[in-house]
Image (cartoon, rainbow, N blue to C red):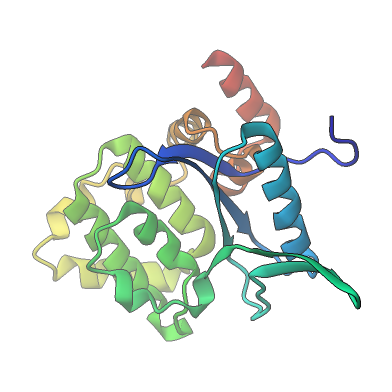
Length: 229
């Protein structure tokens, strides 16, 4: 039994390598602030997962902060002996150009565009391309709300920017489809919308702190929803 601080890993998935029957564990750890010992923490998580499952592990860190700090390796060594080198994959969103993903039609890429690298004057264009993406993908309402909720958490336009966006949307051939999005303008902020997002995130086993951040609901409300599932 491991002693010390309680550890909660954000996303852990068991799957198989494409084209094989090899079972692997995928651990995705989002990090929203700079932490100098993060690489050591990733090694702790890896050790706990391997101790529990005894299977190959693919560790991935997703950085959503603005700072450039990034490490993808943890080492333990002495002047007389090198004990280990632990590597993990990283995705630093601010280093990604949002324009590279607007034709991907990938739900995760659509949501994460809100934390990618863009200039202040591009904010309206980023959201317009996001709306076009989720229109093309034809997702069900629950998934649309989940993605939209995440996007809005990190890229929330001002009133003036929203007006500019709506003026540009009106000129698009897809204007009517965008207006039909269930979580769009007239429904934003409604309690029922937030609850549906929270329920969808709970079903996916996502961290409660992340659900609070995305939905702006009280954690006690989210706990009550979880008990009802």
